[in-house]
Length: 174
Image (cartoon, rainbow, N blue to C red; front, side):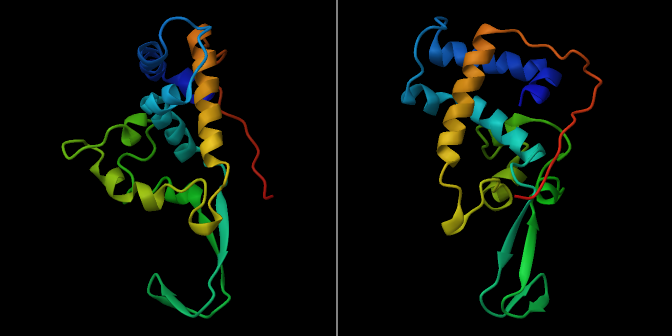
């Protein structure tokens, strides 16, 4: 998250504005549950980072009966791998998918340029999984991330040491 915010100072400015409006200027004031619910732009920033770097790059599933998916017939007990990293960059699901823009998750209405996201966000954006196996800690994770961002960006100015340096990370199967 900090990497993306380091490359998008305009997003940091909007985050700080939201923090000031919701939490006030006193950085020692405890953050309440009601405050967390009001941090809508912060929520959008976190989701947009997850869209670019999903928590899990793929998710395995097995069908319990014969099925037709993508025009192909699949026998029961076929293993599938859902590639979230590919879904999050599909142009038929996301407007300008390579662009980092939290507004795609923020107050989408009928006049918004992100109507495509409104149509697909419930099915294409599923970084915490879905159905009966959805991550039980997803809400706690969002609360913790919102608190962390508020605590950091209300107190500190963070700049990239080298804005041109690529993000280095490792990914592995668990």
